[in-house]
Length: 190
Length: 159
Ligand code: SF4
Image (tube, rainbow over all chains, first blue to last red; front, side, top):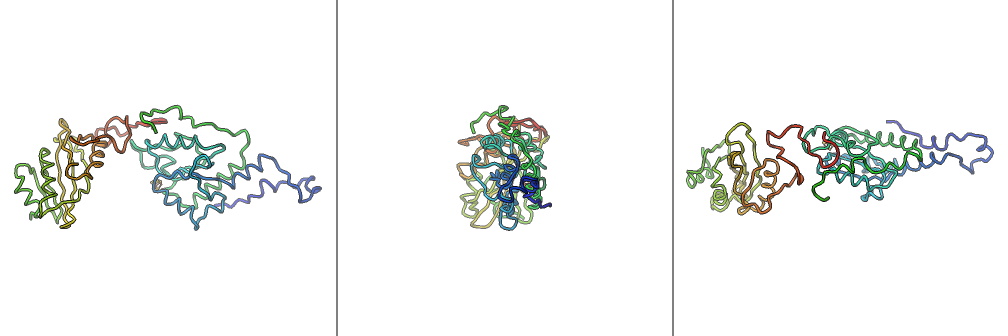
């Protein structure tokens, strides 16, 4: 598990002539970079917890592993206030339209974290009830398999996501609603 | 050795008991489906039995056998700390059995579950519709002839 020196990407590259002239009172950087740097340390996550992986998520969010260290401490239980969707656990076909709806309700920019092998690929639930990986429904940024994954793995995944977010550009957003949204076969109203 | 429960059942419903089995306190009676409500009432109300707790209803698909299905009831007597298992064979041609909601109201959701997953019709159930799967799902997935890859997603691809 690598620890990333966060300051480097945004601030560390500024050994230019201007900075020497201006001293430490002014900070020069690219807007993309400074925004990416801000975003990656202020995830507001929405825990979409459906199964046993939730126990591991609790230990991750609790004091021992302490997600707060990585700037994603505060779970929001309204998708409109969240920008990181944590899909934690088995997603059944009955629940799939709800997951898509939640994803569409989140404001952009937004990222999706697939927590555990069930969310990633359906895991060993290769049957009539289970979605075979949430990437058949919504775009996924990070996959962390494991049944359930160790908190260290999740933290590693989160750091990978931070690296990814730091490199994003304005033009990467918005992504729009999930492609399957129009492909519904609902006979009941949810 | 027959216990009180099986002995009393045999005395009272001699024509309806197909088979009994008892092993280390684990007791089973296979009964005809026509009598299931009467048998349940008797088990609940008889003073020496008092099976007041209906723990579980489930079903089994013995595909290829006739009768194909079996509905299984697990009962528990809180008073005497005794358990009994009642099995009811159900043929595929007449896939119905009387609902026992009138005896134990708690049977409601168990019967819906057995209906949902095995397609067994519980006659007299006030609200027999799917409980775990969704409206519009076709077939009953725990039947052995439901296709292994039979996927019916509400949204997204079949996979
Ligand atoms: S990956 Fe394992 S622990 Fe996580 S939801 Fe699936 S079965 Fe449960």
